[in-house]
Length: 104
Image (cartoon, rainbow, N blue to C red; front, top):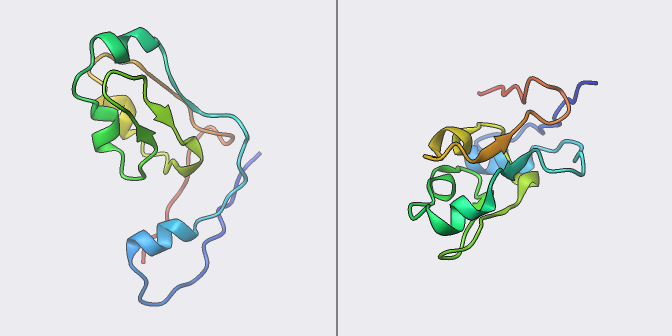
């Protein structure tokens, strides 16, 4: 099953405005997860998953396990590579290949 994002044409819109208009079916299940929650609360002080995410998907209070707003995910997988403990479980939602973006 493939998912085709519906991106309306917006002349002279900023990239941020265009990203907020991308719509696609929500699978209802997060494709992101924290593998071992104890690592986040006991070992991670940098919260790299939070700081690198361009879509504000990851949020974390000091000493807490991050909360995940997966529905905002742009599927860039930056969080997976930024985590120094390889503690992010990440899968492409639905399609198995991720979103294809058309710029311009």
